[in-house]
Image 1 (cartoon, helix red, strand yellow):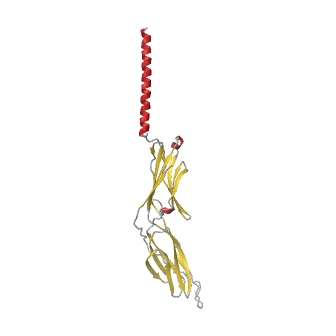
Image 2: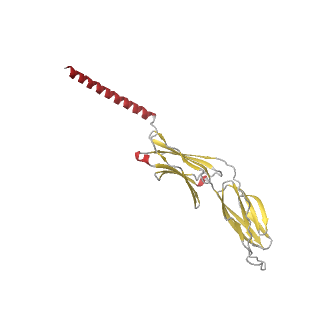
Image 3: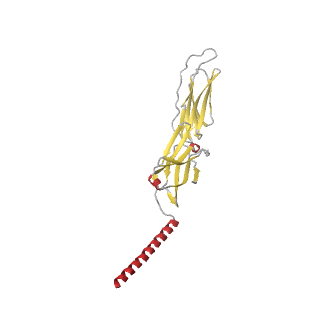
Length: 262
């Protein structure tokens, strides 16, 4: 059975994240002793999910009572920075990588410690639509649309008939950094028993343990129309049958008339 996948990527505007950073100050576990100062470092939030193109604030707090050197190490683009007593807040802009790790490094009295956070960007499909099947000859063409989804490389689109998967496609070869629309086209044969089974299209994002699922409304297979060749054959068959019936009727009538005249 042949299948064709027509992906198309659409650029979208960034989603600005509103709100201000949250600041928190940590208590020092103990006073400085000698040249070594015990202290804690925390990066908050430790896990944050944003729409692709969005922004996020991370707050790096520490318990060092002495002057410190603080830095944020990340491949994401940084924006504004806010400072306070025992904390520094960093703004990260235009997050488009599905999974990014961020480290806050603090040096206090010659000792360096760090805290880490994870920023993810994904978008559940806005819609999953399965068009009514189109009958062409003896095969049905199924077309499913998955709109505004990210990241496409982690997307699997499948077609199910009566709950059983009849076809699926993984889009791991697509590595775009924007929201995308995906169209899946599949051609299948169907028997009489298949006309009573619902067809559905399913989109699944496998995000390293996080699974996001969306599905279409069910549709049913129907005998929508005959092909031109089938129509011509049916017309010819009907015409031949009518001709045979007329010939048989004519012979019968003649016999009846001959019997009556005798």
